[in-house]
Image 1 (cartoon, rainbow, N blue to C red):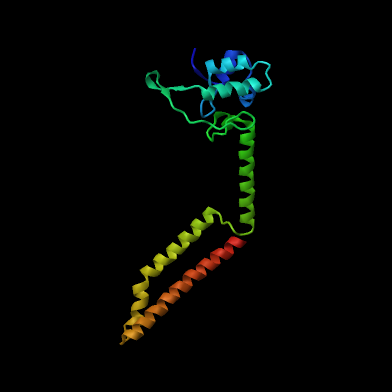
Image 2 (cartoon, one colour):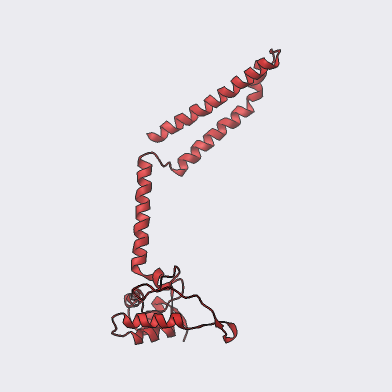
Length: 199
């Protein structure tokens, strides 16, 4: 008999429907792998038998015993495991606790938090505080193209302006004016794109 089975395979082995196995898992009556996807068969069969008809006390007692049991490493040596704090319901408070990752309440809280985050993002989008990634990419690509064009045409546009000049001061002033013109073009393009996003 395999030691690990999927919940569906475990349900077939017991001759019950999968919903019953899901309820066993939610009640903490199954011993699952860390990811909560596979059932440890022998330990789960024992736990189901021990907790038959129990109202939770037997389940808590079983898990308490399992936490106190020394873990076996390679060669049969005991492995030190840290104490796991237990909450008032007898459950583990460890962040990677198998029961936590498979409990309905845990996943309901995660779903509610995700929905709240989505509503928050939608509100930011509606108020203009959040811009779609595609829009940002388009604007950046457009500004990049304008910048490259300005740099490519710089010599052709600047040479006729600088050639007749005779002093360094005149040349610096002309170059600074040219730089300001390019900056205005970039800012105007950015403003137009921003206005386009508001529509």
